[in-house]
Length: 385
Image (cartoon, rainbow, N blue to C red; front, side, top):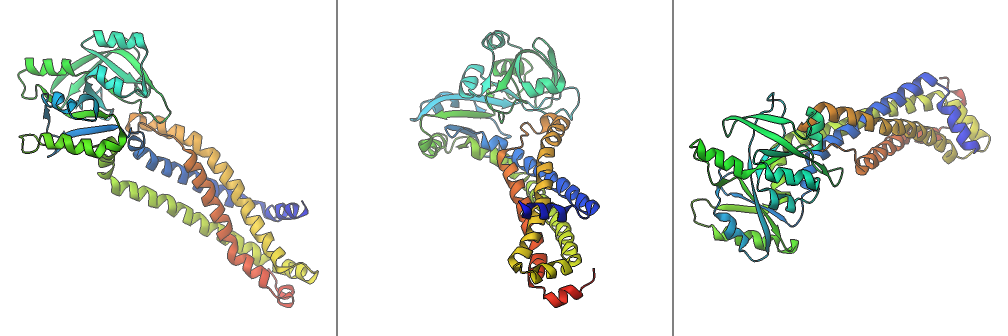
């Protein structure tokens, strides 16, 4: 108890310097947490992918479609439980900056496969009855202030023209990490309209979603599906949903790596600031440390005072910085809207923040603590400032 009081008094001896150091730690820890959360958000889609789901696409590129006739052949492969399909729509809602995923899907099989999308039964039944109906996520609805019954016009890019959809249901996520920024509508409506307009993309599918009976057979089933269409006009590439999602992340991997590096640079900078603070503290108190040693206190006790003060400052800064991360994260999530679908400060990020603060507290005290422990009594008492 006496040791703790002594550490506290030492820390508060220069209130302004301590306050500025703590403020720097708060900013650094909060910034580190926010940047790490951004990195985590990039991988959210891959982390939420089910191990039993596969994605089959055109082997050349995702841009090229697959024939609708592949559906029954894929379903016949041993180990396949169900098959669904989807087309990327890429429409513009009001303004090009309002980006969010829009998928034309086969609704029954798709929502059976994605059980983490929670849709009210009555609303889903209304969606099934309405050819122009749409299901949107809660985050998308909140961002654009949409509700069930609203008409949602989209300006097509891949599929030109103005498309109007009526929102029939809003889905919630079974977990906080579930993406609720998406829009789904009937693939049949898209296909019928394309046929009427005489476009060449009728009866074609962007991707097939395959649910397998056993995750351990995912590689085997993937190879069997691709073998079916080898040497055909549209060969396929089948991979796990996680691998498919990571493929998108790798397109911006340089940016993700840069953000991760910057987060650790922030910690390195605050370490330098903290080390300077502790070095000044030790230099100013050499005479006091020498007096303690003259009174019989061990070098370890003297060093412990330095480490205790450094860790106390780091702990206060870390606690405030971690607490600040959550409201800053909420504010950031509101500003980016649906551009980053899942933005959650995870327990892993909080633990990493605390670990970094601990490392800063210990590292900043090593050299000053070593110097204070080794100071000679005569030299210490002779020291001034």
